Amino acid sequence: MRGEGIRLGLLLTAAAPLLAGCGLFLGTVTQRSGSTSCENMAGGACQEQADQISARHRGATQIDLKCSVPTCDRNGGSGTAVVTMPDGTTLNEVFTYVGVQGALPVPICKGLPIDACQNAASGSVDGIVPSKRVVAIEVTCTAPVCLVSKGEADVTISLSDGSKQESGMGWEGAAQP
Image (cartoon, rainbow, N blue to C red; front, side, top):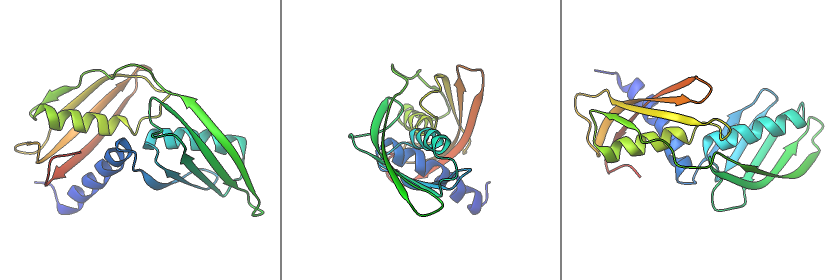
């Protein structure tokens, strides 16, 4: 049985992509050149746009991104960025991007209900940067029993460049969003 600290970590790891999938991601990401905050953006979209803006504004101490369309996710989006430089000056710019178009692959579900599997898959994919194409998703229950209302799972996402991203997640209580 996993410890409570690990379970909490899994729940927190799962929460950001799930909130991002709902368009509710309000978080801070540490970049090489400073911090980034994102409003109403999926985690992967936030990271990719922050990296691009950071590359254009080397040394920025803060980048604040705000989506100006209903959602900024893997399918695309646009918004505004406020970039704070080391001397305190701020630069305002807009960003726009076209993400990966088309449906995600149907997840391979092992030992959990399809609704829980699909929620875990879509929540995990939201953390992948939009320029990466997802070719396969596998969700495996790691708890003794996985239900829509409670469970733990490992998620493996295969990308078109041959790389894989793995994460764990847990949920408990009402059905996942």
